[in-house]
Amino acid sequence: MTTVCFLIQGRVQGVGFRASARRKALQLGLTGSARNLSDGRVEVVIQGASVTIEAMALWLERGSAHARVDGMQRTELGAQPPLNDFEVG
Image (cartoon, rainbow, N blue to C red; front, top):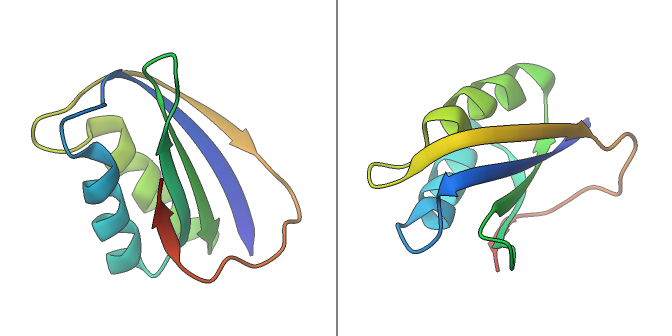
């Protein structure tokens, strides 16, 4: 099980990005979380199989319908306790 943290910047707050990310993650069978950061970015933590994480990473690069993604930083988190759901905070 792989866990990855993505920091997405651009117009990603107030445009349904987190809810759309949750829907996509659940569709792919991933667990994790999405939350707004005070600097305007969104942090998305994803846990699952490498192949599905890559599919999610491709989605995150494009974002939701009303979002504009200007950049994305990816950090591999290594071994983490299992996550049970996908939470939006």
